[in-house]
Image (tube, rainbow over all chains, first blue to last red; front, top):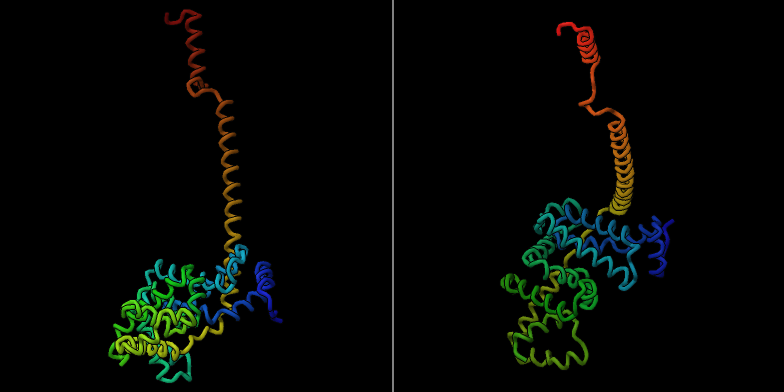
Length: 180
Length: 138
């Protein structure tokens, strides 16, 4: 039976013990956000799946180093962001434009307009440099506050504010006609 | 505040990140009422936000958790592998040291190669000595 954790401390202790129920609980709780961030950054399921798995493997293997200076979630998302950047830098990957057929194949009830929105968003994101793309994803797709983003990216709220502004300004300039 | 500076705050305002006293101090709402260009920019930022809001969440594959746990176990196995390699390397080094020492010992026990006299050479020497003794060819 899978455990339920109300206290983060308790979860961290079980993760440190290598408890499989704790691993599963942790993944169920966070996998969608981690996968979402990577998927939006990579623009491709092919890479997202592999990188997201690596994020959890790194977290489970390095959990003994977690000292609780930030929340476990912030630590996880920081690993996610770093893993995303490293994977792209190391493999010289570029964001890929999404193929609507891919989504039609993976999700039967995905209406065409959802695919179009998805493609529009990914085109917008793909046009941005990585340093603008990540804060925008965290904010607009994953719903983090500027304060939370600052914690994840280890920067100031002011810088987050400027990065998100520049991202939106670039999108606005590139898509003037579409926004009318 | 001029429009260029205002634009930075408009993005955060569209994200509902500016509230209370800060919002009053920046005077964003008053500025928008007076400046149609900034009002238009704010509208664009809101449209961008709405496009992102409509974006459907990506679906995590159903095999995700099992794949992670399987890879984790494999990686653990890999982690133990270097221990075996280290043990093997240590054993090899010890064996090499043992071989080197026993070779050195054998070398010390053996006569120097220049001093080794073969049986043929001894026989020749003895024949020569007899010849000298008995006056032979001399």
